[in-house]
Length: 243
Ligand SMILES: O=P(O)(O)O[C@H]1O[C@H](CO)[C@@H](O)[C@H]1O
Ligand SMILES: O=c1cc[nH]c(=O)[nH]1
Image 1 (cartoon, rainbow, N blue to C red):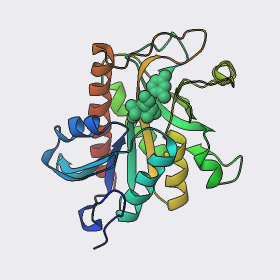
Image 2 (cartoon, rainbow, N blue to C red; image 1 turned 45 degrees about the vertical axis):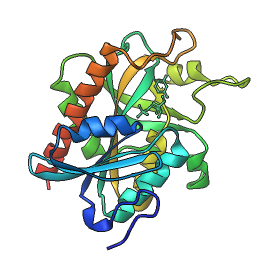
Image 3 (cartoon, rainbow, N blue to C red; image 1 turned 120 degrees about the vertical axis):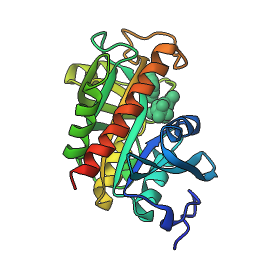
């Protein structure tokens, strides 16, 4: 039995599946959908619950905001024994075709952050596992509302400084939305031999042309978060059945 030094969970409590999300309160919300849910640890921004969905053991852990801290969470979950990680997050949209309340399943992420540059060479892709992405997309399509799958962008900066973030170019190249941790998740999972996927609920526009006041605390976003949680849990059950 090994204690993970930062998450403060023991390897004996690990499950094959983990859902990860930025917000500790969202981790608690997800835990309430599980059978036999129990809090394992709340260390720094990392809050971990254990439980079961349709008899499948699962962990839920919050990873905080930003790739560097999130990567610590992904690394320790994998070291503890987790084999499949699913991020359930929020993101800003690049298109009025998928406004706030829509869901995006991330097939791959643009590595527009600094953490993965310290892990792998330039040009190394941040790609989701095809089985996990397919299960998430199939599960999400069972829900109401707009669901798309495609490339997302992972940034370090949430608020801009004097440097321009090339949102327009990412959008013209085909990216659908922007958030902060999927690239780290996909690179860490690939490096460590785990598999990962991600689904995000859109909470507004990130594109400078479409930008609006950022307010992720609306009913539209809360409904979308509920739908993505349900989709992620359905995907876990589907993936567990494929073994
Ligand atoms: O809602 P979460 O999972 O935190 O995801 C998004 O929200 C945070 C920014 O508000 C960043 O962590 C970003 O990736
Ligand atoms: O990183 C993020 C997350 C949600 N919405 C955004 O616009 N950006």
